[in-house]
Image (tube, rainbow, N blue to C red; front, side, top):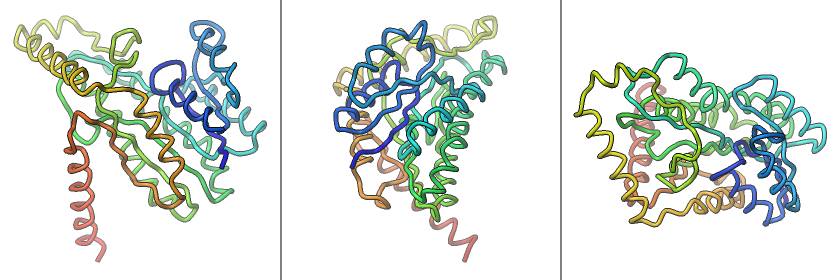
Length: 285
């Protein structure tokens, strides 16, 4: 069954692949991205040539931009069946080396951007008493690693939003799913897409050579695994398609897609769910 799907962050990486994959299956795609008339004009024109795809200007960090994008979409299509929150930005550095302004900038995109799109689609989905929201988080969004603490904090926040809304929206048959990707070769990880890294180099210097060595070791290890497991970003697009094709009411809350984890991501998610169930039993029974 053809669905109307709004995806954020479609100018590159997972979002661009999702747009192509889902459009090829006959779905109607509203491909949201920034800079459709300047820095992303070429990719906007490329996607616009595909059948079933309309490119829409949206900056998820801006209230007005989000409001206009969804107002235009709903006026034309009447409803949005699926929202995919894919837009995001990464960043590296010691937590102490981040200014609060830089962290706020990251949260405006990764965290508040998700809240903005939810607020835009939920009135219509509640009225229709159906809907699906897929949020792209991170393979480490249930815990954290050094040198990426603000990023993981923002993604863990999205996990919290999704989990809580799953209960609040149950009466309206609106399903919420997070996808936990591992490390994939996209513009976000290869350095070609600028991230929001720490901006206090004088603090970083005070941590000395040990911190630099630890950071380099972490990066080297992750990229070695990326190559070893032949991580293909198309996996995420296919995973999104699989979720959309699942019968309503059957979708999982969390959907990890990380070959590098070798099943430990599933173990972690299942253990967390089991512990939460017992915790709720203590509080609610």
